[in-house]
Image (cartoon, rainbow, N blue to C red; front, side):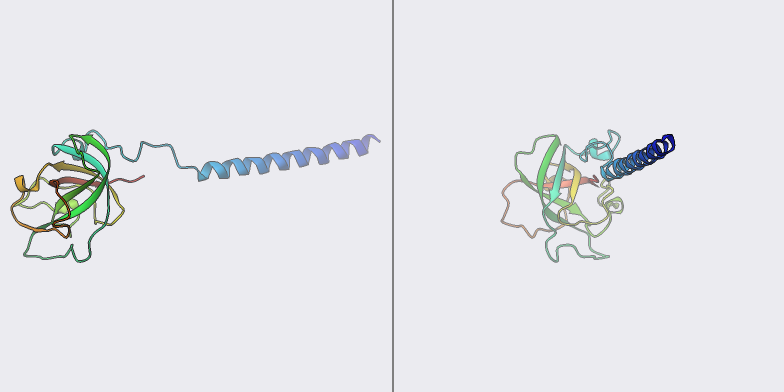
Length: 173
């Protein structure tokens, strides 16, 4: 009688251990599926140029890149106007929910876009793509900062200022 009770106790103990092990695996699986806790996706380090350059700083979603608007010309520098949906204003004042931003030499990664003619621009964005969320340091008017060719596929569709992109970082979440 004691042997049978001991065998049943062992079976029950093994079943409980198996159930506990399965629960542990399930907990680890669920924990592995969770996003790690991190800074909010719109956070920019205080030492980033995006946090100090320009008179405005926004986080905005690039609405689209118009067909044929970005092209490579080795002997021709230009700026392109792109439309953004403002998600958050960090510095300065922007009253519009949609803004238009001019980017110099848009076919180049932002870190390589500056030259002797237009120094002091940059960022970590490599290529422009519709739907991207970007952290932008801006100046209030392109006319005050750039004299050159501008491709504006939105000409006549906007009444507010065209902002000048000083620094453009891709927001990663």
